[in-house]
Every structure is written in C-alpha cells, then in structure tokens.
Amino acid sequence: IRIQAKLTALAVNLKRIAKLISASKGLSSFILRFLFCRVQINLPDGLWVAARAA
Image: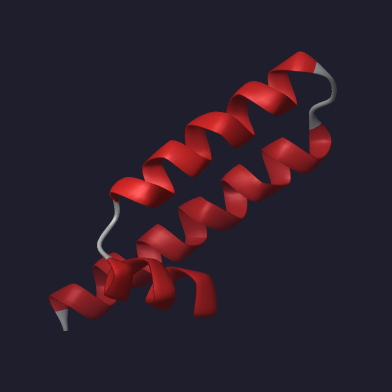
C-alpha cells in the first residue's frame, strides 16, 4: 500500500512538472526538460514505466 501511495504521489508530481514545462517557455522550459530527462535516466526502469503509465 505504501509503495502504491508513493507511486501515486510521484505520478501527481510528474503531472505538475509537465504542466509547468508546458506553461513555461524558452530557456526555462529547455532547462526543465533537460533536468527531467536526467532524473528519468537515473530512475529504475520499473518505477519509470509505472510513473509514465499513471
């Protein structure tokens, strides 16, 4: 149950980040996407798939 709750919280945070990225423009958007990609690479595959599916 705790793991599922963490995944749900992570999914919500990812959606918020996605909204910020879509709302921002120019260099700030590029920086956010670059950082997000770096975090994405560091995440375990299973966790990333679960977060992406949510």
